[in-house]
Length: 593
Image: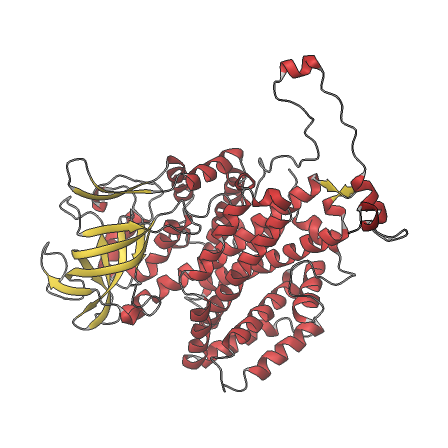
């Protein structure tokens, strides 16, 4: 084997100077006896470290998001979003995020006397995030603000807060998403909306009717069926226990639910939307954790899930043993009743993945600006610049897509075209953005080298958090099949999707060619399920390309089209073509601390 001399690059090699700079040792000042006495254990000087990533406004520094807020009609939330951004990027929020995830929820099934209580204890840091998010209305802005762009406004603030801590976003998201489903039963909506819309976080273990503010969870899946809700075996039997509503199995009647639910996120929520099989078939029900008479509902928490990420938030298996509930929507129409709740949580999965990408970019560019290797700052190294720019491009594409989707939710109720676009674009966006998230987090982590693999950097938590958005609320295959279902049931939704792409026609040849290939691939439905992932991927890339060409920074749009649409990029991040304006892309996305 050769020695070190044989491993050096040949003279004249382009990287020879950097190599020689890297192996030149810095002469360290000798620590004097007095200095050692003043600071025991100090044997060397600490240098070449990026400053702590804290004290930053995570909203204002996110240029692509700020631009999208204005473009999508939500400029009125700018001041509030900046307030959220300052908190989310503060040293306080960073520490609270660490504490909430290192001190995971603990289940207490019984009290010291042996009485069943089924309570989950969360660390105070988790409650601090819940208080902050609820005080800013992240669970209710679209339902309480009678202004245009309310979903977009909520999306921007939700994405910003999620960068500080993602787990608490689950109950925030479910409470937000429950409203369209609950409104299918007007008398229940009238009863609960004032408390659901409260900006007071109330964690007391008392009947929800006696609380200032409540949160709502959901529990649909069962172990034998997963995403196939029609495989539910939980049963619903009509009752008149509290003589509320029509009773006796009427439209808003009372039922007792019996069965097991494999996933119940945020089991300390006050209310839950749950599916069960009534006489008419699978139906939807509203179930309180504490009954109107102050006693526990027969809602038993069997165990908490030991999850890969999302660890500040409890997820549970529950047993319903004649649990009291009220029907929501039409009997036997459970899937149709819960579909809008599911779609709103899918939107939040896109927001969560875009939020994580943005945080990865912010930390990676910050670290590389403050760290030198091979003779100069990492951020000036050609190959690292390629990696960073590629991560920035992916992050901007995700952000611009998420905000366009949010606008579709704002306009869908009054604009049929937007409703059709929303139907297919939600599934397309959820599939692709959430699929890209884990690899993006892994590459951002690697920009910090070995330090990125250490918990103190915060990157392992980000990496563990990313897969949840792809796996929950419909995995990748479910999303692709949902796109096909939309195209089959509402062919006009595909027309609405292509109408969106058409807005960029003629501005970018690579995009035009990609869209034409997509149309050709959709001209035949032979083996369509087998090809579904590739089709949905091409739809997502076409949508992102169209949005970036129309609204993004020119350097970002060009890099995206060259690498994602033009065949001039590789399979890994950091393979943008030579000639990319790396400086413009990185400068636009870098956070100044």
